[in-house]
Length: 119
Image 1 (cartoon, helix red, strand yellow):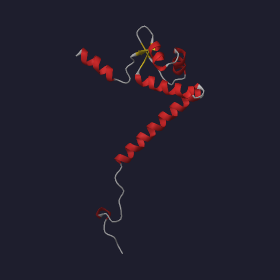
Image 2 (cartoon, one colour; image 1 turned 135 degrees about the vertical axis):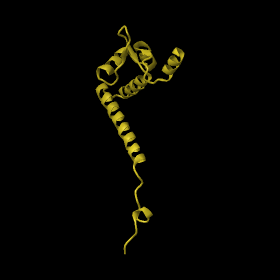
Image 3 (cartoon, rainbow, N blue to C red; image 1 turned 90 degrees about the vertical axis):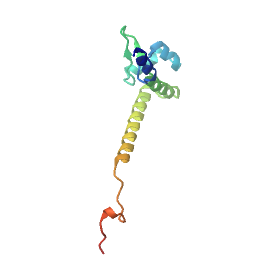
């Protein structure tokens, strides 16, 4: 059973598997950059029992996108705001798609369910 739990962690995008040093190395950035993203509230790494920051794959993707914007000349605070807005837009689009999928089909005048036409 413990082995199943370990394997499920491999598939868990939110499992905090990466130390700050490893995360910075994977992103080609510095630990200070990751700390800045945390201070800006863009990502919130979990803490190990020893108090060390641990990052998930999901958080690394966010940090990579922030780094991309910063490398293009966007100030870090603006990059964080852009990412928040992109996330909000994606969520709104998802909700809109769900509402459209669940909405009943519009009735047409020729449909039998519309009732008899007068005149």
